[in-house]
Image (cartoon, helix red, strand yellow):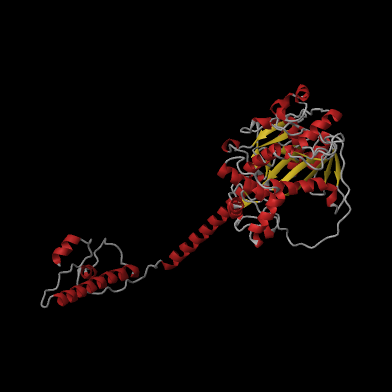
Length: 528
């Protein structure tokens, strides 16, 4: 009970999770306090009753949102008998706040590919903002090649330790030696919704290149992709609620300062998600996976994949770097004397010398076929008359040492535009200040104004006749300056006489010079 109260205290102010997540946190607290295995957790039903009694009524974990009820539609389960027969793809917002490229908290988009026969997440991609067609196209290539083991992963996450005939597969595909414990499938049919990225030309062209059939889901039928929709909910409850910056499934479950809890960048969150899929999801028993020989036992996705491999086999798909380039989105641009211009960026290379200013005979409108990766705009790939794609670098690529996406480029351009507006505003302010000074500058008078004849050096200077070769007559501005100096001297003499008379009766007034000199503290102290 003390551990449950501590877990509730840690969750206070954060987004509400589930009772199962609270039970896992309680188990971690007991293991850290008393040692692993010292204090056993009660059964889930007993733990749930304790949590409901100890928790505040307004902070009950797993409390559902109050929504209107809708009529239940008939549900028909989707059946697939071999790996890759049916793959469902969808995109949604992950219930976690991450740190974007500009340092501000963002809620990334998650795109996954779920293999229906084994319920395996064969590919998952996180993007900071709107997922592009190239992400969906590269998702196809990601599921068809082995997933490499990332540096720092434990040894038991390798494919060699999975419940599959590893030695027989290694004889067919040597890439599996350094692969992670996740299935490798070449999809036959992909079920998509009618989203813009899935019906785009780039995605359909990638499916055609790999020989994949595309099956659009019927409109207003979410049950047509029920498996992938349910997987999103499992990812949020099993993974997202344990990550810093969890937002909760709805507004009523959201914490007080979710944006301040964001700790991971999108790339770091991608690393965590990949490791969680390999370590947890692929080894977690799934109630929907039942083998005909063992109908009472729920199998894990990796176990189901190993069981189906004996019936359908494994055919590797060797993809090279050139195949990935072929899957990139296609654009059509002319080759000018300066090279190729895309979004205010110039790409140039010596390979373009003989094609500058010439139309492409096989291109649309005489333009050349260009492939661009929006997540790394430092280079493009152009198809030359030899039929191959050649890399053309950005002329400033040497100054950018990390991949730069279109999002970063737009952010830079926006900042430059704001800076240009600021410079324009500053130029306008400078022009206005110049006009003010022009209006305030005195004009030269025809006759100088008469100077006052107060005693002092300035009076003598003003009364002296102007000799030949002297400077011309003073302007009104200079005359007023002379008058102001004389007035300052007169005030100084009067203040000195008043101060001397007030301090010591009969004292002689202090001598005051006619010209203004630098202030000398020692001399002034001796006079006083």
